[in-house]
Length: 131
Image 1 (cartoon, one colour):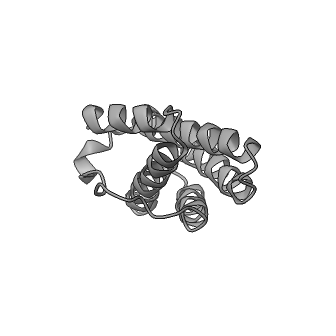
Image 2 (cartoon, rainbow, N blue to C red):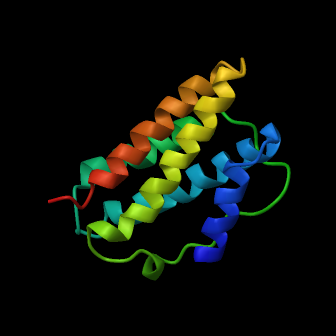
């Protein structure tokens, strides 16, 4: 899983807007699937997990579809137990937020709303297992 996360990191940091947008779309897709998985596993706040999933979906619908690639593999066993298990995914969503916010500053206004949804998703997913 680490390799695919590294690829997403590289895409999100790309100076090419289309590559960064594709990375954000894929990060939001992965974040939504992680949030969906933990919504029902009984290990944290289901409402926050659902909020994270919905925010990822809302952000992703504002972005263009990636021109290539395929969704990153996610097996439920990839998600580590405890609060720290969700940290890599919450961090990835935070990086997607920052990439979208940067692109929004470049006069791509619709991306400001997508960035706000990504930030909500990152905060919600980070809080799922805090108790």
